[in-house]
Length: 128
Image 1 (cartoon, rainbow, N blue to C red):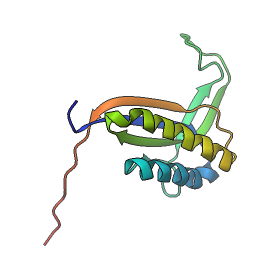
Image 2 (image 1 turned 90 degrees about the vertical axis):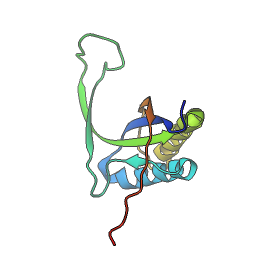
Image 3 (image 1 turned 135 degrees about the vertical axis):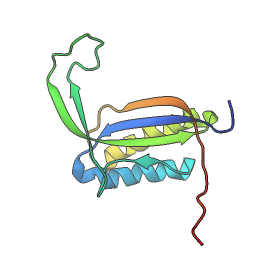
């Protein structure tokens, strides 16, 4: 893989709206301390995502007939070097578990996706 190859994590978790800022800051600070930065949605002045899920959603079915639930969702985007994928996943799990206890969130399930991406950065010249 090239040096700009990254593993991108998309983490979706249900958080009560009144806990978005504290929870987001708690998790984001831990991920940033280890990996240099993370992006999150939801919080004061940030858009809140809305998630829908069915009671029988974990089953692989053609149609779902379980009760449908609606919840506020926070999304985290974290990109890491390929060698850091395992450490990042472990830290994501631990940070969310700690936030769940600390803020009494009641989180039971977290959705995590990973994909291989290429990262590019550039500087923008300042106006003189």
